[in-house]
Length: 247
Ligand code: HPA
Figure 1: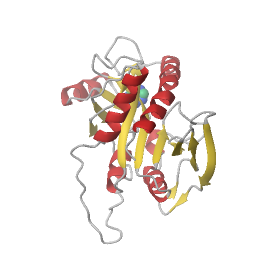
Figure 2: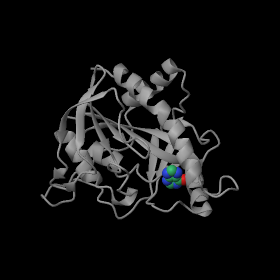
Figure 3: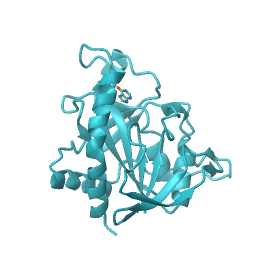
Figure 4: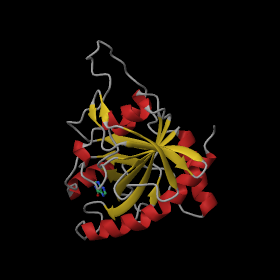
């Protein structure tokens, strides 16, 4: 089954989603951000989990990523499309752009970032050379073509800790590293999904220019306006992509 992890601005799949079951928040790793909602989205079975909880109560550094991914796995999820609001670093990532990164760099710290923490005597190292699923990215790219909705189908997601935005110098460094977008929630979510063998892709909504890329300060009203516009395109894109997924 496919799961959608909703980021900032995406707290439900809309009226076409019909709830069939709800999985409680308790896991061996603590509570998930919200109940996992299991249902039918037109003719597709999907699970939905808002990363920041209902009403955006959980900040990026405090999200229990392990509980969220573990609960999805337990619910029978094998594929995740994650929605992430991001800042744009490279010139093709202007606010309003939808992007499908194919690489990431992790700048976050202090987060529980592995299921293989040695507690049960098991040490495992997973391959993470290509952090995002090619199959899921292809379906999302195809969905963009079908809907006439432009999607930048490559990029490198730099994952920072937040909740503050970056300094201009931090963004310059990330630019030199090759990052094209920056967000606070990309990791450890993607790596935890890999550890549990869940295919994972990120659909990023660019909501501002990253710090120092233009002369203005980062403004929350601007972010919220771009988020609202972006999310309007995200639901049809997700639904079309879900129908293109191989069985
Ligand atoms: N930096 C980090 N995370 C973000 C940004 C940003 O500029 N915009 C939205 N999420």
